[in-house]
Length: 376
Image 1 (cartoon, rainbow, N blue to C red):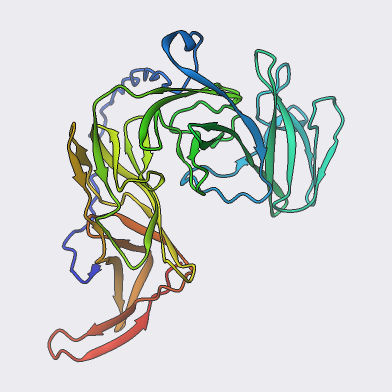
Image 2 (cartoon, one colour; image 1 turned 60 degrees about the vertical axis):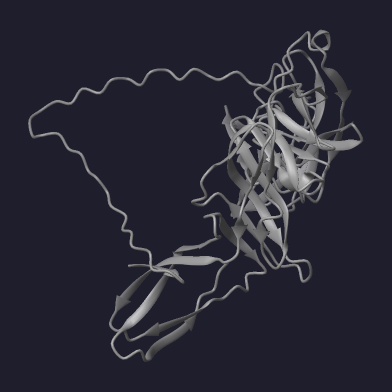
């Protein structure tokens, strides 16, 4: 059964199974090849002649990573021959060579055949060099995760450039050594503590710019956006006892964090936007909740018009439950918290949000059971 607080959800999930008749042969056609969309962030030659302005970037290794990017994670080592490698670009090599043990991992950071870094601690960082196909050499910081004798790794640095007095952090968010992959890599506008997926358009000081990034991250290019625009106000209509600290909306290849823009009604490229992710924080006490799309429908921003999003409180808690032997059990894995527009809230910090559940007899109205749900 499914229940929502305060409303009952009258919906059941069903499955449809298709089977061919006995003795028949079903011929399946191979799927048509998917044409790869062009990368709007790829910095091709000749940009200067087209009016793009370039900015050199500086690499920033980060020991204690705090930037939230809403996606990405740790990656595994790859087996190559008798050993293992970190699968990063290293010209004439399969990657960065490592030797892993249960309690330590050694890294050949400069590819000379000698292990010059020995990591023993979960969360430790080291810096290796990557070598691109054109011979460009760049630093690359790695943070390590140790668990049950297995070592995993993740990028732990970014390229930083200042454009129109705004700091931009370009992050290899999918751990492959490339920084120009739209939607896969990430960009932090203003280094606010959040990073959106890498977007083809960014807002700097309220002005929209198209952006392109070199594969190695060392340089980026911007040009003032010349398409149709409208305004998206996702901040003044969000009702809560706290505040929005990040609210990322997506339109195709474009990702805009409305909280990085001074004006509540932010100028954005015209079109339909879906909510991608964000975070809501209390003004004091350190309480917070992450946010994602949930069941929220897209909103349309029309040319020269303003679209306002009404969302936030009141919240609805949706969950499944079982009744067995007179006991009502809440299925924690099915529990979801939604706002008024269907946006979902999760990862409550601290995990002290514990709704009280009361079970009443439908005939007498008497309370039969009472308990608390712990939400982590």
